[in-house]
Image 1 (cartoon, rainbow, N blue to C red):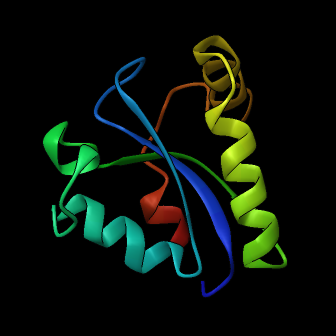
Image 2: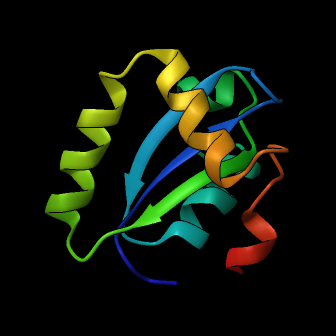
Length: 95
């Protein structure tokens, strides 16, 4: 899956949320799961992919990422639960 995407990862249901954008979702989530990336996601052990959306360009993915980061937490949770009500790890569905 080498397409621009925006994603949300967490450590547990209703836990800490991280929003990111990438041009290779499989590689990026692998990096998060194996804590290969220094920073926020490693510090909080954010390994579970609970939401993603694909985009046609990185520009649109970055724009959406920026928009989502400004949202209230409740809006982010509602968006996750609309597509993934049980907060399943979606990584298996993208590899």
